Image (tube, rainbow, N blue to C red; front, side, top):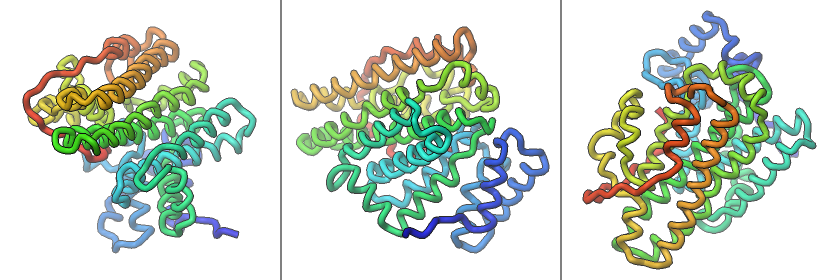
Length: 368
């Protein structure tokens, strides 16, 4: 029988506190204690508990300019996890499986026979078929779960990222889906960046990477299919608890679009409004060479066909995103200072932006 994994004592206490009734229910004194813990942990000797305390309490830090969206989504923990993997795609697949498995466990504990569990299990099954270095993702997942170190890292990732604001059950699927979407944006961008960097000197390998990208481009659609098991009423029941956190602040998303289509001047006011996004308005990001132009320049008919598959999948996703906003936020403003569904509708269509500067898109995981 496998040994049950447990957090060290202090880390377990911090996790229990945040999970008890939702983070919004924390008192000012408790928040101050968590902030002090983070500052103290910065100076503790390196050990497992020290590392976990940093992960568990960073969102309460006030000495760092962390946008609300990142305080909500715990993306710094995903960056910690991905940094342990030489292959970013394999690391992201393991993070996706960990995130979806944690949600699956929550949902099965509540009611194993729901449509949500059926859709969730279908995504996890699909995830195992996706291509990673050395074969299908299922093999990488199974090997990681059988490895003591990797299994611990996956347990730590799940344990440090599942804290909702409202404490309501349905917020779990929202939070976990947002995290999974961030990972899919990262993988899509990383693969697109790889194709852009290599298409003009190794078209055969670039074509193989583009086909790999095509396999991941549909992930956001599958995740939104899962998210649609929320009713508008249940969504509005916890939306206010998320405060000023908004996916408009997602640097991973904007960098993915930058890698695929180039700089979109229509978004300049949004980028300027949020300090961590302002770099997208500036050189060198605003002259990044997008995937579309890099592929077109190769005049490789096979690559152009795969690119159309990628673009169709992401067009469908943007349409569904708009549909979600129209259904779940009818007539309501978006939490990021936008007009809500109207903002999403204006960006359903995308055109590649011409640029003569072949600056490669960035490849880091964006977590602020």
